[in-house]
Length: 404
Image 1 (cartoon, rainbow, N blue to C red):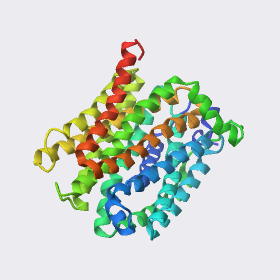
Image 2 (image 1 turned 90 degrees about the vertical axis):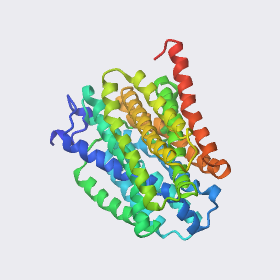
Image 3 (image 1 turned 45 degrees about the vertical axis):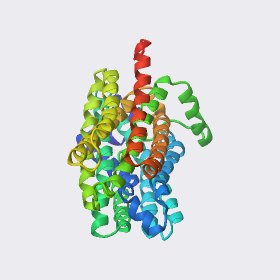
């Protein structure tokens, strides 16, 4: 058996090649995109399936809730079962769920399919800990940052890609194309992923139950989850409501215009390797402060000019970059801190970390759509700004108390 197919725990010094990093990053991006394809399409989907505008945010919320459920009940299995088989099974299941979404003829059927898409897409959060297992300690933050940059590119590229495909064909074609892509990806990963067989032998109930004990005994996990919950809920609110704003009377954007706007956020992916390197150098505290301030500044920028003007649109683009940069940087800082806690429990620690902030993201999407329907961008952006300010308040309080 060669070095890359041995369990990392059995190796004297873990290692990972550039080709494997690229493969893991690409797979993460393609898989996580499935959760976000619907975000710029909630208007057309709601119209086609008779979903009320105030409830349109449920299309994204159900995917995020499904993802959160998968984080709690599937990702911990990465500490118990061979990782490649688990990942491939999830990717194959996502192909089926996407196909069902493309064929949905009612809002209930579409929402159920979105929940299943989110549930199966947690394969990405088995891939990220796998990268951490394969990487040497000295460069673990950089490797996780590089793999996470693929994840972020997938999140951000999903929106413009979905808008472009929908404008050329229909929103159903977006899900159909992705179903075919996931089927091909499952086949590729079954042949190329390194094998990792964990040593843990506890039963499923004990495995799931241990997450609560890990969270209770790990203040660093709770802190990183809190920061990211504040920022990710703001992120979800921003990207659920801005397509509605851009398609409305202030701007009158088509799906192609919304797609071009979405491309601005892709630049936020550069934050991942930067944050990983800073974490490797012991600069997690200052980098966290910068990430929080970036998200807050993004929302503040959208309040300077009335929506509909050229200046307002320019600042909305700048806000998209700032919000995405801050959220992605803080995500990687959290990954680096969490993965350093207990190597044998990385799957469960990762599940607890991500489940916390994805639940917050689901709430952010639902609240964003509701706020926009009730008070337009003014109300939605005010709520969005409040979220990073809560994270900032906790950071400042801890700094004043002499805690990093």
